[in-house]
Image (cartoon, rainbow, N blue to C red; front, side, top):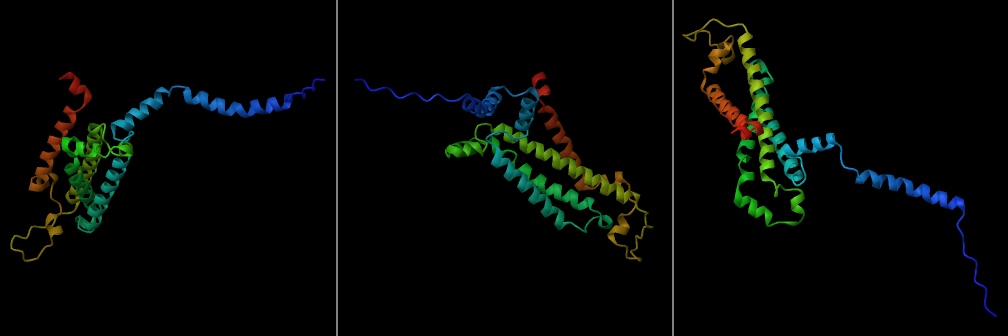
Length: 225
């Protein structure tokens, strides 16, 4: 006599509904992940890559921004109280100048072939953090920081020179009988006269050269040439 086969367990309708309800969120997430990113998202990624925030440059950009803040704060704190009438415009200009000195020293490093070869030898996960595959993009990121620090540096100097010009002038004392302080001698000096000083003149020359470099590096200008 044959043994009867045990009845198969048939899931109830409620269990089927519960299982499908649990699968629906994961299915929706998978479908959303398969969808291509929107145009605005792709545009945002392109902008981030242009300023050096793309994949493969994260650690380098974090360190670079941190070094810029350290350089700015060191220059700012050292020169607090040295401005005309204790103006904060002067330490702001000096802090941005310190950061500019550091960025200009680092500007050419991403384009050095020997440095690229040494970094590529590390391999592995270093590619996710160090700009190995696109050093020109990191070079552009340093140039963006130079532009920002230059704007802060020049703007702070303009405010400082305007403060000097607007202050009431003191009668000149060629015989130094009144022993005027440096601030009293400088008070009321026009901006045009201040620009004739060597430090300001060299700054204007460097700014003009940098503008030429930035304009000629624009994609539209490069395509036209």
